[in-house]
Image 1 (tube, rainbow, N blue to C red):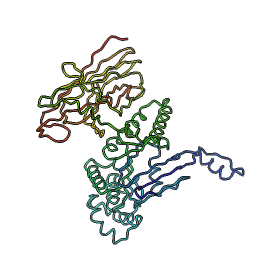
Image 2: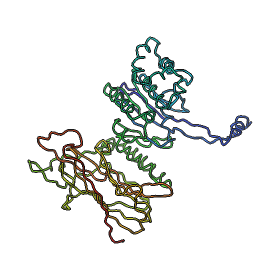
Image 3: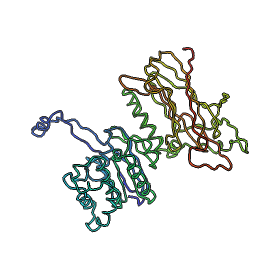
Image 4: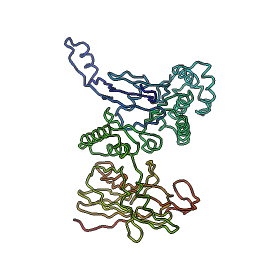
Length: 462
């Protein structure tokens, strides 16, 4: 294995035998002709990828897609049916609650027990003991059996052990989601410290924001298959599309993602284009100069990470930003007011309808958004053939940089609210740089509170 690779997975397959009843398992074991009474369930199906040393890689996918199984194979908890996994470095893993801990032992005993499993002597764990207890911060509960712990206390102790044994590779399986916010921030701060030290991190989460903010790349799993890998932002966008795609269209979407993965593998430049979310040099050159800034429209400022959801009775068209005078713009001025608008055509009757918008950074961090109606006051009924023009007014309190806009319409299908249509990264805009700017960060706190409003206007049915 190349010296710069921390984890290499090749053609990994893990199959479970599923029986309709315990009697079928017995029949199969006793049948003289070895008749099959089970169905094969592919928890992992021919999975291959590499993780470089120092990378932080996110794994995302729906429940049951094989994420946890993969981590258990990598850590040696499970044995695959076929394929290989090679790991270069010492692993510390925080898997699901209960993994690696004896519930009848106290917290202190489990600290040393985990240390032994990781190959540390008692003397080495003695050196780390105070740091572990300080980070876990569970007080006298550390002397009680862990079966009496809440899930939050359990995670505190497990994470404290995992990060204080100085691993080369840290693996985290969604466990941090059960901790309180203050402890989660503490954990993410320590993860950032690991990244600065060049450690390799494998991170499973359903949090799109965490994947985008923390990771160098992401792996999208579905039904035991690695569908796509690449930069976190476009991968997360396609995961979200996968979640909201109607069941009868999932197979075609999976095939679309497989084709995309194949084209990226054939031409690595396609991956760079897919992940890129920066304007070209031509766009930057068109920025107006001088002390007098003017909002303008740059036709070359086009997002390359747009994802369009499947329509479920509505279609969004023509999303764009205008000045208050109605001029189309996408290079904005800090502190000025603008209008974000789009049109929605309803091809079917819709109930409990609401419209929304969301502004994100280049990394995918969700800065803020707005909806047309609160949940309790949604539009009761929208008849087929209706066309709505949706208008959101906002004050640009963003500092110079590049940003993206989403557009979405939700309604009730069955018993739950879902997207009738959604466009991710559909509009790209920039806030112009200024001389002598004295505010920092992403949001300009000196301009006062953000003012927003929403408006709906109806046009005649087509």
